[in-house]
Amino acid sequence: MAMQVAPVHRESSSSGSITKHLTDNGKYVRYTAEQVEALERVYAECPKPSSLRRQQLIRECPILADIEPKQIKVWFQNRRCREKQRKESSRLQIVNRKLTAMNKLLMEENDRLQKQVSQLVCENGFMQQQLQTAPTATDARCESVVATPQHSLRDANNPAGLLSIAEETLSEFLSKATGTAVEWVQMPGMKPGPDSIGIFSISQSCSGVAARACGLVSLEPNKVSTLISVNN
Amino acid sequence: MAMQVAPVHRESSSSGSITKHLTDNGKYVRYTAEQVEALERVYAECPKPSSLRRQQLIRECPILADIEPKQIKVWFQNRRCREKQRKESSRLQIVNRKLTAMNKLLMEENDRLQKQVSQLVCENGFMQQQLQTAPTATDARCESVVATPQHSLRDANNPAGLLSIAEETLSEFLSKATGTAVEWVQMPGMKPGPDSIGIFSISQSCSGVAARACGLVSLEPNKVSTLISVNN
DNA sequence: ATCTAATCAGCGGTAAATAT
DNA sequence: ATATTTACCGCTGATTAGAT
Image 1: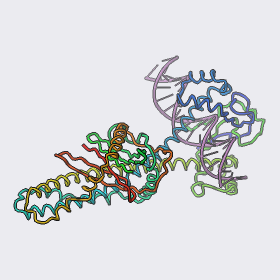
Image 2: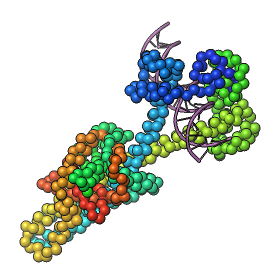
Image 3: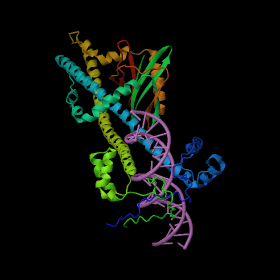
Image 4: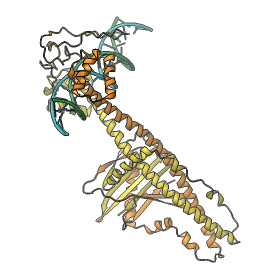
């Protein structure tokens, strides 16, 4: 009901009143490269300048003389918005790639650990048998180990869709993991301090031989587990 | 409430009759709910209607009568663009959450397995000691069992040079590893290589304290790998 | 010529500070 | 306490530039 949004468009000219930012034709005016550059320079130091700072900016910068204060304000607003959107998207992509690669690595390591566990259990059983055949061995404290269950991982983590993503991005990870250095970035749900995890790869050449180190870390309150691998 | 879209603008000299698609007074006119709804209905079936289809749309839909063809076109363009952006962002967030959850599970599983390995190795060493002190062992095969792959791996790869590199790298790494994740930076002069990366882990217990070493990077035939791990 | 991506700008809603 | 001001943000229509 109602709505009746009244007169829609009728053509009308600029009515040359205040709207200086529109040309007589009503077209937009893109800011010149110099203007944008000047604005960006200020933005780099201060993305959210006060109205005082903006006025001062107009005064001290002749290039911006023909831009109205309000437009300066709007420009900064839009600039913040754009950066937020772009950064968010980019950040999410990077983080996702990292998480995917890390998941893959963790799954492989888990697989490796499982195999090792079974082998150790096997050896354990063998030696236990050896000790039993020898009458001198009197102690028996090895049962609890063999009884540990060992298979929950496989079924639990196989969302097929994610796997395909994981595999795809892993290859990218592998391609990047050679000949790269590391730089730290903040992970999303993880506050600085405990709980953060990361992968790294460092390449460096020492005495003519190129050495590469890859690693994975997790920092939690009580344990710092770090894995580093070096090879040449 | 009732919207009350009363345009507040100044008079419009209304002369120009310039391009009609101009917002009348240079003012901003949002389409009504019905109009948007109608457009959305069409968009649901066909997000990219031809110009013919758009003209036909205007004819058959009286609500859109006062919207010009060009505006219809623009509406669909913006509609596509923004849906794309939103969908991407949403998808990334969802994937991110799932990956994070999966990651946590994997880390827990990993930790559990590593503890188990530590315990098994500990018991293994204990029994091995028992067997050595007991001279009753008649067969020589027990040593082959003790010389498990992971054990030999640890002994075999300790070229001091690599160790120093690894330690140095580790300290540098730990100094940065405070609640952060890593970002890849391309290093000049080093091409991404097709080296395959694998994972292995070694656990070793000495006097009650379990030290764990895990490594990734399975290498090409001739390469060696050494790993260092700190776990307390 | 149309599409996509980026950009400019207007409007409504909201929160915080200030004025009445 | 209520009303006004101010700035900010999200959304949206419109424009431009570049690619197809």
